[in-house]
Amino acid sequence: MAYGADMTVSSDLTGRARLREAALRLFAERGFEATSARAVAAAAGLSPALVIHHFGSKEGLRAAVDEEVLGRVGAALRDADTSGDAMAAVGAVSARMFGADPVLRGYLRRVLQEESPASAALFARLLHGARAELDRLVAAEGADAVDVEWAPFQMLCLILGPLLLEPVMQPNLDRPMFDPRVLAGRSAANQRLLRHGLFGPARDPAGGT
Amino acid sequence: MAYGADMTVSSDLTGRARLREAALRLFAERGFEATSARAVAAAAGLSPALVIHHFGSKEGLRAAVDEEVLGRVGAALRDADTSGDAMAAVGAVSARMFGADPVLRGYLRRVLQEESPASAALFARLLHGARAELDRLVAAEGADAVDVEWAPFQMLCLILGPLLLEPVMQPNLDRPMFDPRVLAGRSAANQRLLRHGLFGPARDPAGGT
DNA sequence: AGAGGCACTAAACATCTGTTCAGTCTATTG
DNA sequence: CAATAGACTGAACAGATGTTTAGTGCCTCT
Image (tube, rainbow over all chains, first blue to last red; front, side, top):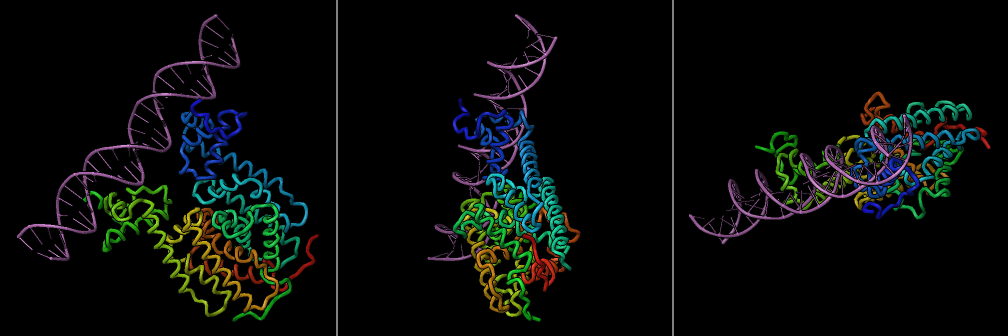
């Protein structure tokens, strides 16, 4: 009964899964290094020694959580509706991926700013998706010289920026950033920016130089 | 002589400053929590006890480093040339701030993804700058309905995104992301995006829906 | 029923952490 | 010259960390 005090994870799961879920939540909240194996075990209502027993090491636990998260992200990406308007699909993907689960969001935020192989793999995958989306976009809109080198990165910055900056952005807003309504508004703004720039649709003033 | 082994910080500084500089470098490299007070002291060629003597605690050391960094960022922002083309100023600011010093860049990356007061203050400051720049931009270009709510955040995402994502973006590029040439190219791409969107200047196809 | 394996535990381990302590050295001040 | 102050030191402290160990109970298979 010693470790059962703060059992916040539903207990109808195998011990291994309980540990992994608790770790996902705690890593997302506090980060990997700031979360002790004891804290994970306590949150799962289990003994710290089980972390080693099931995953070999704390690092092994992280790997298991990474794998789990990558799986969920992959599923979210696959489920995203890419049949309709190509431009709207961009918003749909980001909404599906990030809007849903604050825990997943927090964990992704942590992962994306590490130098681990997992983070590199995740970003490479996102980049590939952005390039594909952009190709479809170019084909659909019949556009000329899109900036092929930087456009995918720009797209990702617009989508991932709010994810990464959530902790510092949120205090400057009056509504929850990832509320579906707010997210939809931001997504629409992103589509407008990608299509026409910051200014009105058919505007091309004399500019500087 | 015990602590003088790996003295990588120039020693013509007061002990306090040596510690602060070493901490800045190590915090930027590994993060605050992953850097021990002993490691900072060793890098400065001093005794760990001096961290407490000079800054009261490790947290005090962080505060001192934060203050130092915020000062440098403020100076960079002040020095940025805002006299010429308003749009180009955006690129100039980011170049001045982030291009210069990889250590400063790493530290900013760490700070921007915390929930500390320092990070909130820094972002609020950047947001204010973005809004001001955007106002000048709107005035200069004579534009209509710029998306006032999200535009400043979009601008910041385009500028800060590469900073935050550097560790995962760099492996997908063949040249150093913050090399002046590359940075200039990205900055130009950002200006094009903000002005005209992803597609050609005078392009406004029939669109979906 | 007995044997083997698996989930699980408490307790201890070595190590690392931030911090404290008592004292030395040096430079300034009266 | 004596005294004070402050930079600086090695050694030690209490606590937390990841991990190990030895052992207990349960479930399954023969």
